[in-house]
Amino acid sequence: MAIKDYLRQRFFPHIWCPGCGHGIVLSSLLHAVEELGLAKNDIVMTSGIGCSARISGYVDFHSLHTLHGRALAFATGVKLAKPALNLLVPMGDGDALAIGGNHFIHAARRNINITAIVMNNRIYGMTGGQFSPLSGCGKRATTAPFLTIDQEFDVVKLAKAAGASFVARSTTYHAKESTLYLKKAIMHKGFSVVEILSQCPTHYGRKNKEGDAPDMLELYKDTTAKLGSKALEKNPDLIPRGIFVEEERGEYCEEYDKLVDKAMGGAR
Image 1 (tube, rainbow, N blue to C red):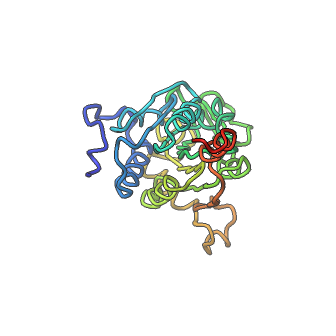
Image 2 (image 1 turned 120 degrees about the horizontal axis):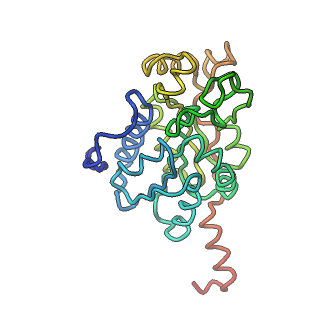
């Protein structure tokens, strides 16, 4: 099946701003799905509200465009009802770690077999450029004209601490690497988190003097390094990329089935 067969082409052109990184994330995800040979009917994508959430409207999968911050809650319900399906949940800063933060940590704690894709552009792009839990200190936003003083969440550290059994990070500059991590995440049995740094030239880049989309992509190349690389050893201030957690643990739906079988005396 060709990449275009996974798209609802009638909904193009997309609504993302020129240079937005989310289209690159969509491309990396579709390549992962295509390389794994997954059938469209075996995939469910749930999303909330925001620039990132628009992905669910462009893919020709079963899809749910749901409430802000509740994408993982809807995905959990689908997974419990139909555990054989592959659940993909693309989220932005708010859906994942602001209004959706509680759902994020508990989905990780449960280790339910869902792939969470955190598209980190460090801003609320759709609603006008307000700062988010991922913006970090010293950044400018429409709601921070005198710069932010809030410390950002580290998505990788938070996911690890909450119990996710697969955690990875890449960027839109490293699109093929993102595809590799997404493939591994989808095939992993348990809660998987893939953070992808995604440029927002319209709001974040413009206000923080990081230039246009090509300039921001160059920043991802220059300010990140692979885990275990000499560059990271020499400069620990670089943002690490790679697979941080890959553990085999009991998956929530399977463990729940065991509990039910035991309660029924193995009658099922």
